[in-house]
Length: 354
Length: 257
Image 1 (cartoon, rainbow over the protein chains, first blue to last red):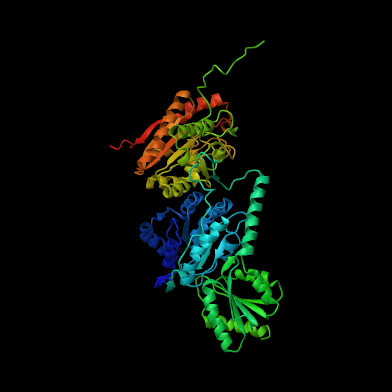
Image 2 (image 1 turned 90 degrees about the vertical axis):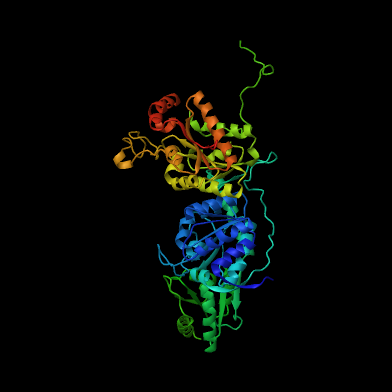
């Protein structure tokens, strides 16, 4: 195990990517994650990693497309408005089945919004964003340690399934300093047979494309993608659960909200309310099953998000009407206090007969 | 009746380059894309660089370039070819990387990516086919459509007041310090085809110097959307395109003075 360090989330992310053997990083500066590009500019050359500041997020995501298409382990990061600009490229990357990692350090929107943290890009990330039927493997860290841990995992999942992976976090996690320990990383090996590194005599030419003009072919490509998505849903669902064994009500929260939810849980437990917490780690594939199972024995669920209520729709899908689902959110860069949420959650708990 | 020809005693002096796949192209009769594809693939064969060349296809008529060019290729989103090529070249600086783009792709939706790639001096070759019209979508106005030239989105002819001026890309990118070689050629006569090939070879070979971007503009035709026969279109090109887009060398810093 390596030494314990004190690092900013954005810097831990960049360091973890380098330690996970990334070969290139292309990005455009945007608050609240510009430290990532600054860190990469400083550290990448020391490790033979390519760093390039693009002229726009549009260019950055397409540089990523080119580099990933040539079979390199590459990534980018941005924040909400920049991620919106990247949606075209993300759709193409998904359609062309290119593995890469994209980090969204979510800030409040819509529009230019605010530079303060938010979780309002959940829908964009897990329900689409760009055009077409595609999915992003999505990991949601809630601590600086998890940012570091999920970076290598994101690369591995992206390459295992030849599908883009996104790390969805927020400005608070990017900016906060916490202790972090980088775990040793071993690349599980990557298949490069499909990549464009120049055609040797012995094989046919490779080409990277998302264009299949005949609907019969395009449908087959879609079926292939869907098959991959079902595999990912089968194999890669990740979540943590806390004190759910005796719980009568379960809090559901991810990322920054999950750490606040943990405090909410303790406040309510101190009041004698049996409250547990489910923290989805993968937002897609979503941990529906644990929620469905819990719905058979708890009285209700309470979802907290820094948005108007986005993930709560997935919680409702998991619960499927079996129990009531409450919600509390703040928007526009405002962060709730544990006490504030505890009050709302307690009122909901009383309502469902606790 | 008839003459029996034996191929045995004949010397083959012209054939499909090995780097061009044996496929019937989808291009319209008389279109300059077929010739231009061939020129690029001839030079890849002659330079012996098939194994370390990666091409980037655009969106437009040449979107399927990878069906014909027998090299590793990537299909870029509309206008993003230069960014995609940048990503490839930065990861593999010793490979030959080129984009093949039309006027809409390179000079309208992708102008930003084009200018910044040229300005950074990416060591790539940009093959720019300018036929002053949107071919694939069916004859709409291009950024390079001439004043007075009709298109389906300017049926009475391009008007400066409404649509601005046709953009001269070779002149523009030659101004940027990142370009090392810029030449405008045409493929509407055999002599010009030979000259175009020389320019393309020079452009590709300049990548070895790692000194900047090479840019070859090919003034071409679009008989279908210009609504002319191929012969008429080649004549129209001479009379209308070339006065506004003069052929010639716009920049050559290859020798390094």
